[in-house]
Length: 62
Image (cartoon, rainbow, N blue to C red):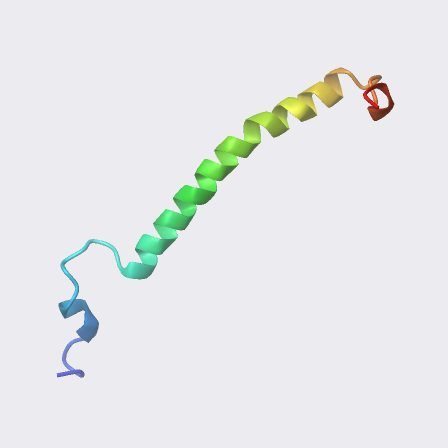
């Protein structure tokens, strides 16, 4: 029985399009993408301000 079917555990799982590791991969990629999209705008704003106003240093804020 084990030799005939390539994935014996696949019979117990309800028919899904993706394998479990593919589902985890998609979830991880989604989390990384959302984190990247949340971090990118503030970082881009900080970099843009640093390039736009190079004469203002940390000494002006302290």
